Amino acid sequence: MKACSFSEKMRAHAEKIFHSALEAVDPASCLHRICRRNNNILKIKNRSYDLDSFKRIIVIGAGKACAPMAQAMEKILGSRLSEGMVIVKYGHESETGCIKIMQAGHPIPDKNSIKAAQALAELAGTADNTTLVIFLISGGASSLAALPAPGISLKDKQKATQILLECGADIHEINTMRKHMSQIKGGLLAEKIYPGTVICLAISDVTGDDPDIIGSGPCTPDKGTFDQCLEIIKKYKIAGLIPSRVHDHLTKGAKGLVSETLKPDNQVFAGVSYFITAGNINALEAARSEAVRHGYNTIILSSMIKGTTSQAAGFHMDIAKEILATGNPVPLPACILSGGETTVRVRGKGKGGRNQEFVLACVRQLSTPGHILVLAAGTDGTDGPTDAAGAIADTSTSARADALGLDPEKFLKNNDSYHFFDALSDLVITGPTRTNVMDIRIILVT
Image (spheres, one colour):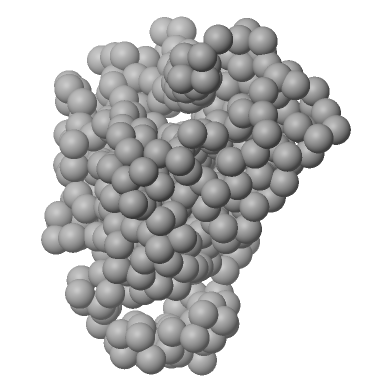
């Protein structure tokens, strides 16, 4: 068999494995799996809610996956639904009935993020003790629903967000900061709904599925503090970059001059229930089944891979080489799967995202005896500020790049993975998937 056709076969396998992962975390399907309504009884997993005990039922939410989640809730609730509105990223809208869809900016909030967040907060504030609020949340909510704390402007929030994204902070650290710059995050939206009853339905885009980190936890208690925010600023040495009004606000909070986010003992959480409808592990398990179907001995390393992108790439390549050399931890033909979310410290002026950079960091190490293919992509269909979900490379990539005069190391130093893979026609482009459970990495070894 020719190397070219063999490579094409492996690429087709990798793409099928990735798309099987996406199908497993389809937002509407995931909601229908755990939510059922029988007349007046709404059952979510093992909990039941008597809809007749509420005068109003409203649906609110924010996140890249919220449009299909809203569609699912309209089907489940039917005529029992009073009204609703959700916020999604531009281009992620879907056709809905009485639930209004607003679009806003991601990953940097914009004017529509504030406009939409204000509308969300106003609708939430109409709840009383006869209201059931179903809150839909998924990745992207932190940016899409941005209502800065008093004294902090949109420009301040935008600059602070950009700095946090570029300095190498992970999503837990970024969202800890976001919660302490907001009027609705860190449990503050639940305060607006109180004394209404709240059901939170979440698609997790964070390692560990921490409810207070998903979307910066608008309806969940917050473990973070203003002191931790100042520690994050110190850790990444960004005190001189963070807008002065943001830094002043956080400093006042640490001194007790600004109210903290809401903590677990607050009464507003007495009527709040939280359910995870899908996460990265669900996508990985589906990917494993598809890989096995294609004849690969498959291992899921973890759904919680964090750390720097370059280190993660080296770790995965070491495992691939171990498989070729010793048949451990799984024999050939092998498929290594992992998920999670790594971080990139932006030092160059190029274009790309953490998944494209992950694959680019692997390119030179792919020129080994045997055949290794790497695909890394974001399940939301967007990798960084690009139209690509990620990239794909195999043992032939290095030679093809050399033939075009493309030096992987130079592109890495400039954080320009997008243009490297674009020149090779090796970008993974899916368009908006309308879901988001972090990243999927697929490594095939034969």
